[in-house]
Image (cartoon, rainbow over the protein chains, first blue to last red):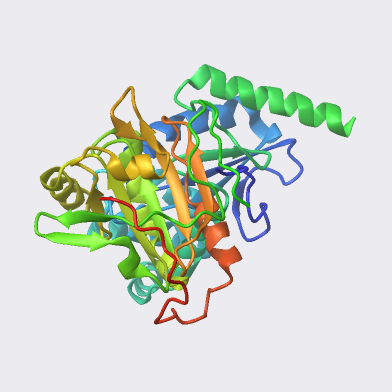
Length: 184
Length: 183
């Protein structure tokens, strides 16, 4: 059904890696416990390596908590880490340890990242970032996210297969080209 | 307002403005749910081809997750496929589903046919969505390509356009000319 347009557009409240003026913005709606998101993680990393500052990567939470019982806590953990300036570090940690997402595992990751673990634990316990995670989820539903991961390239849903790594990176390169031409 | 929503492959599902044909189907081995019992609040009908198939699983998992949003509109959601009641029971338990799956099993696909959402060749329903208003009138419908999970944004937009987000569900229907269709 979806017209597949990102709603709302990327803003300052998003977690974005790389500069705001990058010609291409890739948005992922993902779930830290979703195996497909785990498979997509290194592919995104590769795209970031290859495209460098030409690619801005944004991650929004889309925990399918009924299927993935640890997904919501993991999403809140990434947000709690973000509050301490370590969103991407926690993001990577969670995706690299998808099979160990119990509360004590997550507290261990916070510790190894040098976070203020007392604050971190309080934030998780109080659900400080539960609403933020839910808001991300709702925005995904509105944007036509139909499963995880769902990607948007410059605001439009990417309906190709991300698992076809070469095609995915080529699509991003093409978008860079279009972006550069559009601004020339 | 009665144009059929025509999907690419040519099937014509019932379109907006059409009274939704009533039906009664088993929700569990010993419980029957009749559509008209839900009159007074919006109803989302989700026809899908089969329990357990990957796309359907994603689709029902998504709707399961979005139930709080649907409930904000006072809406009920019903999944419908030709699978039998025991199959539905196992699938719902496995996926931790919190909404009813109805069994359009005997005569097979009869309800899907009423909605123009039956695939003769495959013997399953289409992947078709209907949003009904509190009077049982179809206000939006959509037939997705069989391999594509249609997501939920269309459903939410349709519910929003009914304008009932905070309105309490009406206790009674004002219509009496509902279509009584078999079964």
